[in-house]
Image 1: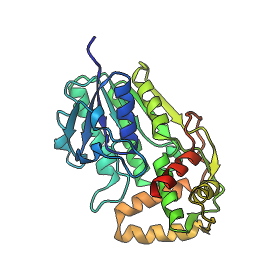
Image 2 (image 1 turned 90 degrees about the horizontal axis):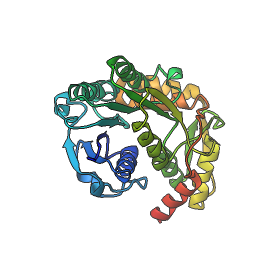
Image 3 (image 1 turned 120 degrees about the vertical axis):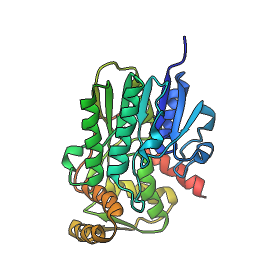
Length: 295
């Protein structure tokens, strides 16, 4: 029996790398959609595995250039996309990448009779629709629902590489948090989430899956763990939310891409984000591995 073929869009990112490995481990033929293939051969900054050996085919394309995505899905059985804007880039918006880029990919998938589309969106999105980034995700989610394409939408709380940002701040000696640090969440490791994503490829019904990791922490507890892994005394300053709101307004005047990312960060700092738990990998171990790597 011929291997099933899957396109992984966003393959060089944190989750994309773990998804490529999981699909390959289960016998799929993997095509990676990336802007540049250089990253595939080396480990990422948050212990993301190199994946060049697991990729059978590479397609070079850019979500901002919709025409460059044409034919990306040719010959594919499944499309998995975690393609999205994760950091501010000059003159590039979440609307261009998360919505319109994925929409172009969906249109190509439909034209090539792909049998299923799996997409990564945001947990609790309905509570954060004032964020341009979340809104862009959900505009595409609606496109996908309306398309007639069989789909699964996966909604994780946060990834471990997001926690890597806290680790970086802790390593500098001081963490600044919006809010009182008491809001709770359960971030998930990329390998644990990848298993959920690949399981979804085998599910023939349309579905939406909310998912988080096995452990629930407050933001304060998360950052204290990072300091402990580094053998440092925790230093955390809580910044009132109104200060963040003012900063967001000012940034929005001069840097809209940064505003989009910061708006999401502020939104998740206002609420609990605890989703159904899964996985076996623990954040404390991840921080210890980062500390060992950083020497």
